[in-house]
Image 1: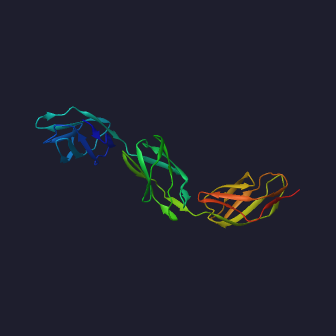
Image 2: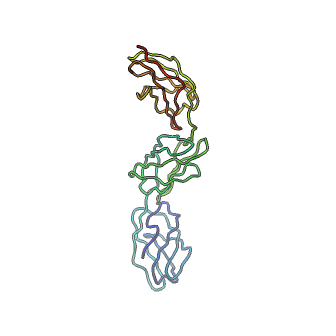
Image 3: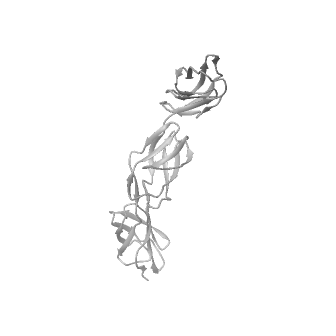
Length: 243
C-alpha cells in the first residue's frame, strides 16, 4: 500500500495519501503511535493530515475489516540556511547562488521573494540555484524542502548593471603598484577588476568608488574592466603603462 509523499516534516501538518484496496470505512490512520487526521476516504485511498514525528515510522490504515500491512514513512528535519553567496545578483537573472546549511537534501525549490526556482542539490549541506529575472531591490530567500522551510537571515538583492564613468590616474609604470581610483555607479558588489586580461587587487570604497592596484604589465595601453554581481562594465579610455 503506497503512501505519497513517503517523507515529510518532523513538525507534521502536511497532506499525505495512502492508496490500496479495501479501504472503505477507514477509521484510523497511524504514523507510528500517533493518529493522523483523516480528510477523505474512498475504497482505494485515504487522505490525511500527518501528525508530528521523528525518524522512520510505520504508517497503517485501520478499517472495520482490520489493519493494513505497515509501510515506512520517513520524517525529515527542516532545512537550515547558514550562508547565501553571493547575496546579490543581476536584474536579468542567470547568476548562480550557493546556499550552505543543513538538511538540504530534500530541497524542492528556492524562493527569491515570490519567484520559485528549482535548485541543484549538491549535498545535505549545499545547493545551488540560478537567480530569476527580477525588479531591482531586496527580497527574502527561502529554501523549501520535504522537511519544511527556512528563510535566510539576510535579504537577497537584485542589482543593476554597473557603470564606470572614469578613473585616475591615467598612467602607471610596467612594474605595477599604481593606485587607481575608479568612479561610477552600482559598484558596491564589485567582485573583480582587470587591467587588460590581468586581475588586479581592489577595495570597494562605496557604491560609486573602487580603488584598484594596477598589476604589472608590458608597456602599452589596456582597458580597465570591472565586474559586479549585477554584470560588467568597461571604463572609458585606456590606462597607459609607460615605457
